[in-house]
Amino acid sequence: GAVVSQHPSRVICKSGTSVKIECRSLDFQATTMFWYRQFPKQSLMLMATSNEGSKATYEQGVEKDKFLINHASLTLSTLTVTSAHPEDSSFYICSARRGWVRGEAFFGQGTRLTVV
Amino acid sequence: AQTVTQSQPEMSVQEAETVTLSCTYDTSESNYYLFWYKQPPSRQMILVIRQEAYKQQNATENRFSVNFQKAAKSFSLKISDSQLGDTAMYFCAFMLKETSGSRLTFGEGTQLTVNP
Image (cartoon, rainbow over all chains, first blue to last red; front, side):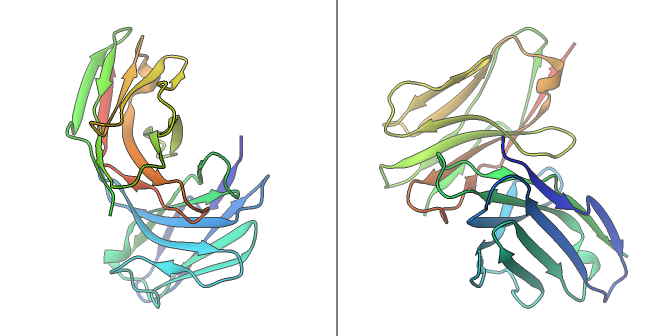
């Protein structure tokens, strides 16, 4: 199966700093990548959808200046949380789709962000 | 807009027994996919089973099978011969069969515990 690698798996940062999370498709080209946020014992909340070489489409209520998404290549998308605050602490998950192969999306391992 | 509802926040089952998780959805579209994803304590999202709406035959994957009732907009997951490793959060998800940018809409999740 297709593999999506997300890095780092855990990160702790100080309030006011920025942190970057990487999402890589290791063995396929990802035409579309998705970023989710998940609170404890809750479902995945879609933050944004990104296509290679174009600007990300953000969901309503998600601050695009705070959560910068870059999908610079067919194998890499990054999420940068800028000027992080404790309320940004959460579990962030990326997923990638390779064209339209039975609609399946492959998920990264997730990143637990703690802002102190 | 599409919605997915899982009405069972928590369920438990004895090892080797069978359990059914419920899912209903709402859409006015006719061409779509339905999925069940599993999220174990590691929080890695794992695809359990996929169903294409135009296929009347219920999908099966080893011990996992679905009961897809398109008219009733119901998509339940049956796990046979439950194993301890099946303990996880299970999410039902819907996706329109449009483009590679189509998003997954997740239900709230059902926490399944398999007891020894």
